[in-house]
Figure (tube, rainbow, N blue to C red):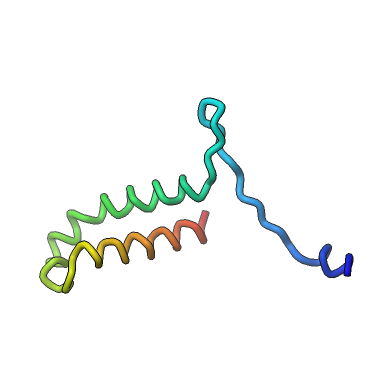
Length: 75
């Protein structure tokens, strides 16, 4: 049993210390994903994303979740 536990690789994400407050990297990934979405919004407006989407706010939330997943996987 112990050998099985030692063979698994555990990836630990780092905590960020901001003024004595520990912030999870998960929160920081969310902030990065939100910044990417805000940067993409003018491009989405230019290509007519809101005309294509049935419910634009719902589509933007879905896009935010996808970006958040990619950011979490990459960083």
